[in-house]
Image 1 (cartoon, rainbow, N blue to C red):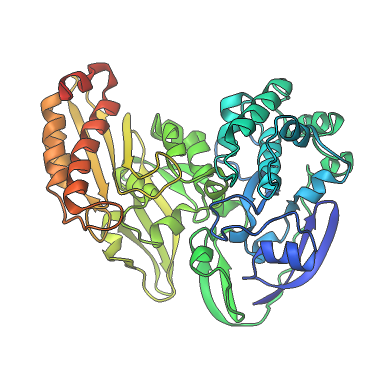
Image 2: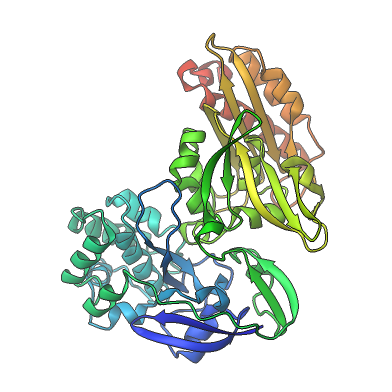
Length: 481
């Protein structure tokens, strides 16, 4: 669909008519002529096309900034989402010459062939802008979504450690941080002055009608449709800060957390509301994709994609999630485990969309486990999640358990939940949960593993989840004896 948008690219304002479904990567390279943004995998996996995206930040119980900056892959970013946003490419950073980030990469020999270097520079610069804790570990985590084809990770690690040491004293507030980064040449002064205030969005124009599709972060849709056909009329879930709101509410005597339809994985794990409702869940953030993908991938999109091994779906199912669906017939509520009707089939009626996601608060123990070919940044072979409420006498008052990779849909294992309720945690209980998990569903055999292998994994993941839920019991000593 053709639409007028208003956005800032580096230090220049642009008001253009674009196809909303066109990808930012192609516009940057072909229309703006900025070739430093590379086309690599075109699937959001390599980070060669990384850019920094700035815009209004939602208030999700964290420190209010007003403006947020995140690294994103431009190969999964639609032009229609740039209205009212600020986009920074490698050319924008380099307009005033070499920056300390670039110099660190050069000094440590981390550039090698150079194809991936712009993405690494953007990722490390975005890390310094973000306000995250500045240390070598966090710096390397910031580049987890970037691949180096020359296998130069040792030199990149040294460059990241050097930057972490040099910039350990950055202030917390965005305005103050941008001032310091400009003074120390990480950002051109003119660019830094613009980064505290994104441009105004264009007035909505009707555009040209076409085939309608609802798109969340695009991290799945644009992988499957890397060259969207003209005539598509996308409707993006992000339409203002409210769509990314995370709030706490009471209904029917239960404390709930409500997520807007555009809440992404980074929003979710970083929310003070979510962390209070499910203590410790934030430690599982890095089990899910990479920073640029978490910065864009919406939970609603993850659910509607209906993958039987979706990480976020497994977690949400264990939290007792209910979907609020809105359409021509009004609103209705569907329990997450009943939303999946078959492989890639969901209970969405014509014209319906996910309007909100609600889950129960008050879980005091939570665990998520997955097995995949790579420890990080990979699709699970199988996964599981468990949430429990402990009673004052040390027994399990309530429990929820989910598993993925077991069947054509994600499953809630009610038998495992019943086995936990009223019991005291023990190695014997962990073994029982493992037996139940291994006997659930009918795992398929594919390139990631055989059915027998998956069943064994489900058993061992149940053991691992038990060890994580009750670390004080040191269950692993008995389970692995």
